[in-house]
Length: 258
View 1: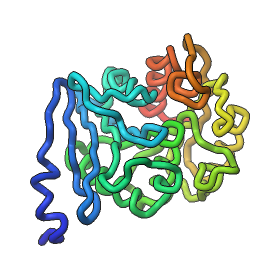
View 2 (view 1 turned 180 degrees about the vertical axis):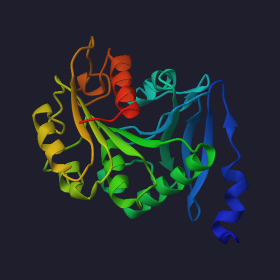
View 3 (view 1 turned 180 degrees about the horizontal axis):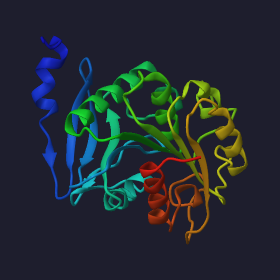
């Protein structure tokens, strides 16, 4: 098969990776002239792979001492996912999008980037592949679950979901009936972010009416929330209970149930 010219030239560069103490920084060609950073940490004997979509403006921060430096819930919980027997990939940012806001996360370019990243992860591991988003990252995971062809991913995990009806592109404004994969909704009972109210989560679950398996896990616990209530170090980011939250996610991925 002949590769497109835009892909052939950067392919070697794309698979030119910077290896660090635990993981590898991949620079993958995802669209013509565009590369997307992905952090990759495989695990010996893994039982599944998770592709994590951090919230906020996206990305996983700088690599410091061989690890991504972002304080986002999913990024700072990376080693908990690995300890649970999961290969971990973290979606970074494409070179033409310094910020991944809701509009970017629901656009065709983002879906193309996600699809190309999934192709590479499939090349690296045949294991079941789950998309895991948190906060604004749930917009990416949901849009991909809707827009990707059947069979590309195994299921979706949505934590601290962005559901506010006044936010264009938020989950309740996407075609949730088109999601036909297992979905886990994980939320903190004390999440005070107005865009992600715990009271809206049962409605989100009901709106996923064609998901063959779906469950809402409302968690509580943690310690010392600080900073703005919609930020990663408050209840919105499962502060102080990262391992408990990840263990609950990993357990459900292993055996999805209603």
